[in-house]
Length: 327
Image 1 (cartoon, rainbow, N blue to C red):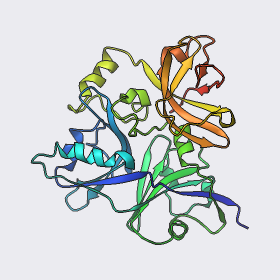
Image 2 (tube, rainbow, N blue to C red; image 1 turned 90 degrees about the vertical axis):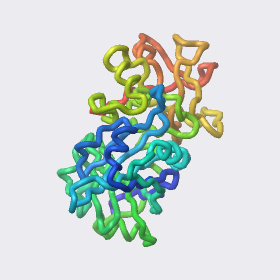
Image 3 (cartoon, rainbow, N blue to C red; image 1 turned 180 degrees about the vertical axis):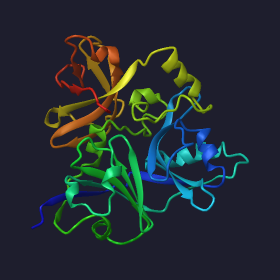
C-alpha cells in the first residue's frame, strides 16, 4: 500500500552559479559575509553579499566541491533567486581582477523535495541530518542539499541534477522505497517561511541589512574573518550599537485580502505606529487559504504591551504574528 506522501516541486525561480579556479576560496572570503575557510565537503552554508553600506545585494546558499587530489576548494556553487542572478554575476565579476576565478551559470534542473517520514528513506546518512547544519551529499553526479527541519520525522532537500531523466525516477532510485505517493501541493516556499529563511529579490535588493532577515541567526555572518563589503557596518551594529529590526513570521486569512500582484515591501501598521508604517513584508506565499509572510519590524514594536499589527491602514487585516525560533 502506498501511504508515504512526497512533495516534489520544480524550483524554477532559483538558479545556481558555479565558480571555478584556484582563487575561488579567497575570492569568496573577500566578498561574502560567511567564513568558508573551514567549510567541509559535506555541508552548505548561508551567506550574504552586501554593498559598502551593509545592505544586501543578495543572499545565498554556498557549497564547495573539494579537489580530492590537491585537497583544496577549487569549485564553489551559489544558490540564489534567478531574478537577481545575472546582476549578482555582473557585480561579482567586477572584483575578479587578476584572480583565477571563472563565474558561469550552472546548466541544471533544480527540485525541492519534502518527505514527512524518513523511516521510508534509503541512502541518506540520517545521523548527519542534525538541526541547524545544512548537509550536502552527492548521488551519481547529482547533488542533494538538506535544509534543517525541527522535526526528526521529516526532511526536505534541494535536488540538483543535469540529467534529463524523469525526476520521480531519480528520486525513487536514490532515496525512496516503493510505498509512496506524490503530493502535488506546492509547499516549498511555505516551508522556507516557516523556517525563517528569506530570499533577497529584485524588489528589496540593497534595502535590507543581514540582521533584518535574521541572517546572523542562520549562522550566515562571520564577525571574526577579514574584511568584506559592509563588514565594518555589521561589526559596528553587533559590538557598538544594537540590532533594531528583526524578521518575524505572520499570516492573514487570504479570503479577507484584496490581493495585489506584489506584496513585497508592503507596509505593516501597528497600534503604536499608526498611521506611520513600522515594517515591511520581505517574502510571502499563499498556502491553505492563508497568506504566510516574513516581515521585518523593530524588535521594540513586537514587545510593546498590547501592540497589534495590521496589513492595512484601516486595521481590518490583523496579522497573526510570531517570533521565529532558530534553536
